[in-house]
Image 1 (cartoon, helix red, strand yellow):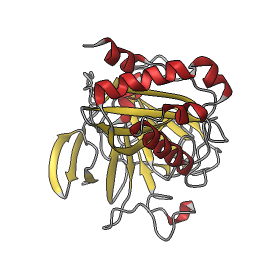
Image 2: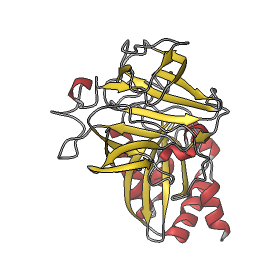
Image 3: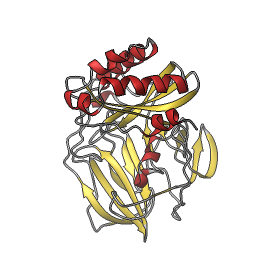
Image 4: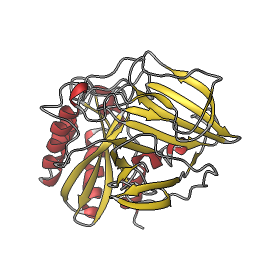
Length: 318
């Protein structure tokens, strides 16, 4: 592997703050791609924050992007993957390879950090012993789930490597009615969330406000949250509940199928959805994620057992 490619893989992002909405990121991302494909690297540098310019001067910026172009060629396409504060992430296809392009912006849309990482690394997760049931009624869409970065951006986070994000869509693949400007327009918002298994409630966070769609709350990343101890070394996290909707308390024993609360848009969430994962200890900053399976469900309207959903699946409780 060439030194240029190694430099490409391991360049660190310099992060200061996170922008306010996805449109800002799309605008700056497209301007970066345009400047990069036309060899106008100074235009990218000119949009750095002051601290970023000090950390990566014009000479180093030009060297980096020249090496990137020499190794991978021009950018063909770039699609939004999700938010991983302070970065907005894009699956980016070059002439000679694919990378995850992560971009961080200040509130005035200056570049405070970026990085390019290999795209498609598989995980090798230990499996949870507890078999789960789906935590909702009706048909839901798996927006993130699986063992690769293509299918699941959570694989970058040790505790969340086996995580899922679920939301609801209509026949036109839209998650909301009208213009999506309010939570009430989203099909998932306010839907009942049920316990996927029996266990002891060991943590409850309630009272976090629901975000305006498109905005994020990074002060309380998981938002309104329930953590259920399924057994020793298996802790089930469910996140982003609607404010004041949680129906259980810490220390309470819950049974499979019991109502936990309502789907919301609290925490690090740009629209109403449910985040769920199992980890091997309670504390997220030191835990490792576990791959989880569902005992029985419909996948794309076909019955299946002992299945771990992946991105793009339509799933339904049986």
